[in-house]
Length: 425
Length: 186
Image (cartoon, rainbow over all chains, first blue to last red; front, side, top):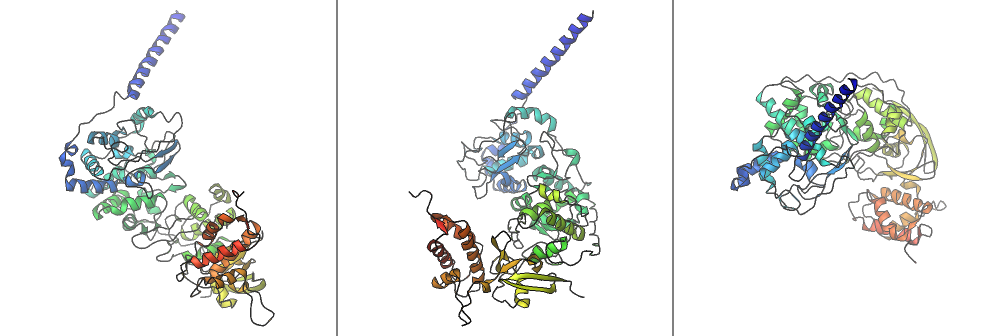
């Protein structure tokens, strides 16, 4: 009796394994992949000037350049390395070159790549943000497709991905997608106005802000429960851009509008990967779209910005040398950022009230002190390069400097330890 | 309102200076001009770009580097040793005619400068390079590249750099001990 029960139990388990296995094979084989029809833009209507202008604007709003145009390389010919925990993936050639680009794709192929992460030849990795582009409607996909067919075809082969086993088995993405590909992303702000709805599309779908500003899980998926709370982004951390996080650091809608349009605001300049996002994408947004994106980020009823607390009374004695945080600041920072931390127009940003100084996470502040920043151009004037001080200052001195800045001009605790600095060297 | 002050002592061109009470936010170039009566260091851009104001910081390990005095506070130099453009020529026995250093002599012979405003910075950077090569000679075929790397950040608006670079290159190639034969030379 017992033997028979056990035998039946094994039989059921075997049947379940076979069914699951067969299901997995069918799923991973691509038999269940969605298919779409081609549209008018595959024909002569794809040459409509208005459509092409809209496609170009959408390509800017979608920041296709950031990954698909290498530094000093031809437009949309790919080659930008994207470092991921799973290996390096290179932005691909999306010019209309028939051999190396997407010249043989139909508008249906293009939509499927944006919407489902499935290129004609193989599944894409989510380094291509189809997880957010999924919200792009077919008509906008068609405009993008039509525009991309008009850029000069460049015969440059894609760089092969450097993704080791087992992640190099692209068909596994067909298993990833049902788990992590969502039709809608969570909203972090409240709103219902037309402006807010437009902003949601620009932010959550086209602008794919969440791809950098949301932390990721072990499978590389977005942790949507922590949407916009900031993530790790290579060497720098992307800051919290929830309405609460922005207000905590002093951002107002006006500051955000300036920042997205001009790359500069009283709270600091765009740096790191955000400079690219500003330069290639957000500065091209129309005024209406700029305001819509900000309306979505702050909500229809923006929170008042948190005032910068009065700094504590200066306790530190004036000293020569590099002993206190204040003396380090005066020795190597004040020459450019001014003694009172207000920066110098046309040269440096203010540190007093700076969004990075006000960030509870000191990672970026310490990283910039250690490694410096490149010179950058902005429509209202350039910001010069900042040298790194890794060779000049000890971990202890940098920790004291960071704490001096945080407590005086950031409203933050002076809790940076020398070990935190050492970890970022 | 009173300015907070700091007491500063340092060595400039081999001479002890201080302690002097100076405003804590004073930039080094102002200290040189106003407190040390050394006006040879020139203020160019005032924001660390042109390198006209570069002075030499001599480190404890025997190496040296240039530091931009317009954006570096005087406190940075406390108890340290620096050299300015005034410290290179040798005094010639009180006759008033100083003997230029080899770098200065090379610049004169090559007509490297016209207005001379950027020259103190070039003298200091080139001197740091020559001294480094005394400790760590390089292959002769790398000299041109290393000169460019060492002087690249110094901006000159008159002569277009060529005569500065040629002067330093020729000096290095003509000075025994700064270079060694090329690795691939047989």
